[in-house]
Length: 212
Image (cartoon, rainbow, N blue to C red):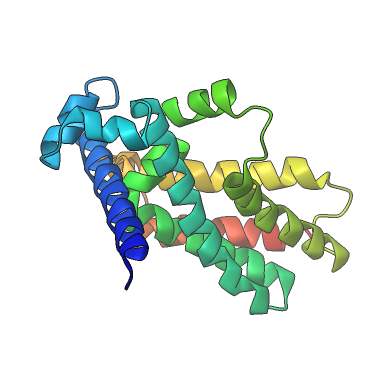
């Protein structure tokens, strides 16, 4: 490995360390309570070093936001081999749930915290948001394919896609934030069901399947 390649690898490694430290602090302390100095201290660097790579903590949280969408989009890509569009839509829902449960910190940054979207609106409004666009159109194109096979007749595909996404987001957020399990436990709802998240998801799939 040459000197240039080594320097680039070190640079990328440091950026990953900054992002990982920031992600942990944002989840632990909250975005507002976390400073660039806090992030620098966590990785034993000076704040000046952080500013070489990121202009402020808004820049950092947006970078994390993008990284989360890249991971989600990469998981969706495996679904291109699923020929039946409704089966693909169902599998997409399962992948979305798995992503939310396995990457709760990324999910919070991507879909719950307001700061990444505020940064996007302020600094990137006229740019193509490639990561988010790719993830959304994976869903939208699958919905359109379902319509071509007889599902969701006479329904506007963008509105339907956003409705499906909103439903899945609500389910995942209720699960990751504890509301789903709390309500089921304390209101004695479906006591015979072992996995309430799976049960609710299957109910949603059944509802969509009947839209044919």
